[in-house]
Length: 449
Image (tube, rainbow, N blue to C red):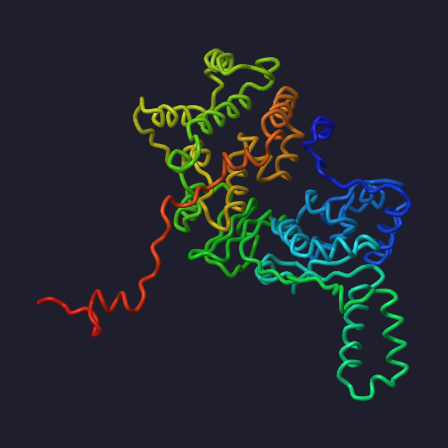
């Protein structure tokens, strides 16, 4: 893992906390939330303020995420919005935190200039002892304030200002005026510089969770279902009819197709599908040859083809399936029949342009573990877990490839692989009442005999 850390592929974009002022702010927030303090002089934190070093010091990687539910967070700077979320238990947590910080960036910038903001992602579930409880998570509310209670004081001051402006004898209420002056000394003038945080509640639909599986929960679809990496029989009664094991390739393929969640790469608009499939072939080849073909780094495609011919007996069916599809895509070969039971099937798909595209690409990454690039982009926790057991030659190749081909232009790589172009033509506007009358008359369409 050291190689990944050195190349910025692990623990990248974390925020450095150093200096007595910032460490003390973090400690005050940490004590406010957990009753603990760190003895470290400097450390790194993620978007939620979690620090691997502090977790190691406490012997508790969940010190801000007790039981993996209702994650707490510490915000020292709005720059944390660019950081990853380490050890995520829900796929939506980072998205919600990043969105909340973005919607309140000006207010949070002002608040964190003087103090740390501490808070919690709150839902109605505090204890997940059985899988069915996961379906009760429908909305998440963000509760936050500075450690000194700036927002609480601002609300209190705003209420007292309203009393002062509306009550007839408030001008003579010395106690009220003294209270206003005292609170204003801590908050500033909230009438001219209002301090409030907006967008504190977010709806939750489909998501991945590390609990009980992990599980992919698709509850807001025409045909809802759950995909589990464990045994479906151990999940008990769930409020969905379809519960699929990750090994049920045919069932997952039908589920994704029925809900319009995937599309074939060769038919996707706005991408170089042949190039993407050829890269997937390279990744499958690397997986097959790691440990038997020496150093694989900096190999040209011609050298890779020679290696493939020399070790043809080691090439898996995924390689041959993708080769046939590329041959067809470039116009020179017959259409290859790749059904859901073929090992290459899920390598030929990508998420369709739906709100759940990230979740679907995450599921596809787990179904296609030889595509280490998609695994790294879409499912980092699984990537790190699998990386530990790869041969040294594969580890070296993967780290160098991701540093050279992905790190230099992350946005461009994601756009090339997963982006969806807008329709070429604007959708036609819905017909107005006058349009319908002009077309069929004021009494509606008349059937012809």
